[in-house]
Image (cartoon, rainbow, N blue to C red; front, side, top):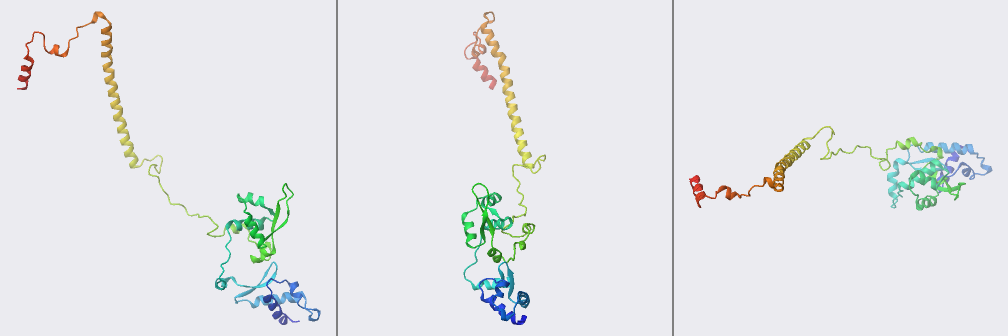
Length: 280
């Protein structure tokens, strides 16, 4: 058969199939009388892929074979045909899946050691139900933990032909995904009111507060010094009184202030007259 005769048959088979088809599976559609070889089928597939240029669908080769699919450019409009919203996967699930894809085969304890958190059993169950991962063996260590690896369904879902088409880790680190990267914008500077920006420089408020504090401290020191001086001045007198009382030779008559002001021979009322004259 000629290539132009093979193209409609292969196109119809790919559209009728719910799963991607390999060249070998497409070859089973023909018998010996058709005289079709795999090289002719491969050329027909290349011609069909070229015919899709400028159309809303494309012929894509994935891990399980060839399939027709909607182009990414028109997907936002086509997705409105389905009322059910697409599944949104958590960051923990995607991180776990990425570790399995890049470091397979890998065990669950190794994933937990890399991520620093415990891997939820629901995450492993979800990926197994979607047939993205499978148990490929067991680690020969105590406990025999299972080794996980990816499947062809994983490659088909992410539109990959093989694991070699995974982006390198260097490109993943440079991806500008707002949900997966940390903000690098500097935070606004907030200066504390009670701390100077420069440790060696004093702000006006601090200078005023320190001046007021120093003045208060200095006044308190002067008051304390004055009290100490008065105490020291009174100390000798107190000591003198104590010594005088203890020495009988230095005893003096105890005259009161009234007796000193009014001698014994003074007439009564004289001090009042003197006071009145002084006021006059």
